[in-house]
Amino acid sequence: MRGIFFKTLTELAEQDSRIILLTGDVGYFVLEAFAEKFPDRFFNVGVAEQNMMGIATGLAEAGFIPFVYSIAPFVVLRPYEFIRNGPILHRLPVRIVGSGGGFEYGPNGCTHNILEDIGILRTNPGITIISPADYKQTQNALLKTWNLPVPIYYRIGKNDKTAMTGLEGRFELGRIQIVREGTDLLFITMGGISLEVEKAARILSEHNIRSTVAVVASMNPSPIEDLMPLLNRFPLALAVEAHYVTGGLGSLVSEVIADHGIGCRIVRCGVREAPDGLSGCQDYLHDKHGLSAAAIVKTALKEIGVDKRVRT
Image (cartoon, rainbow, N blue to C red; front, side):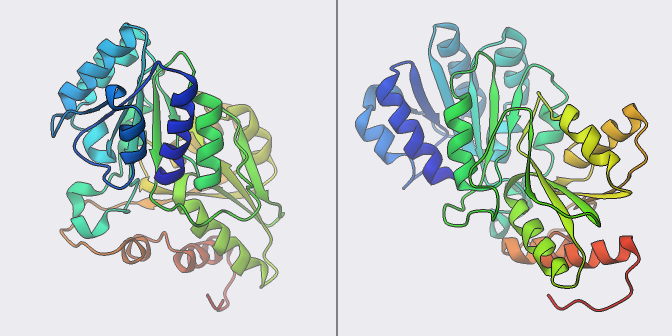
């Protein structure tokens, strides 16, 4: 996702001189095209994320549209107070771009995993959150939102090769995108883990379990009006996210069900345990935390009460 994101950003910067890019000493082999084309609009501030956010706030106040990039935990957690007191409270168009949502930096250890960013940021009504499912949706989301007059957090991954079947890059702020229709089970998902969800739904369909798969790619505004009728159609929904089960997508869906008296049971599929010191590749950590396609299939079968083996 990050490759197409910065390729598209470079093209947008050719059209609008207000676009500025800042990095906290990361992004090698990704940001060079922008830096070479616009050397006077590219700033590597070093490992100083709080200062970087302060600089971006000042630039936005001066009429620019700054994009601030780093690995997601460093660009969200380290400067959080600066995000809140700067672009959020002052309603400034700072773009926070976090790479590696969930476990994408798994081999680097738990300090590089980001499992609480959406939960932290969505408590602030003043910031829009965008977490695309694949690289095609990433590009479309950027094209449709880069010029909004509010701060935005883009949670993007590193996968620039795999597209989600049925999504075709569709994106509309505050709406859901349906990528598969079925009547037995509802999956609601967000971000790069959506690829595992679509794979799980495909496996289930081979065993006559038909699922609807809905992608939620944005919050604040959240797709509440779309979720209400969708949840009313199903007795069971699985919310799947590479995030802690608290505060993120599963919490949003639970709030919609509770606030509107919907009779759908929600199962939150996400990370439930504190870090235990183990590191490993993304696939290993997905399986460990029940987020691989095989693990999602297993959870779905258990929750719908199907007692049979399904080959994954």
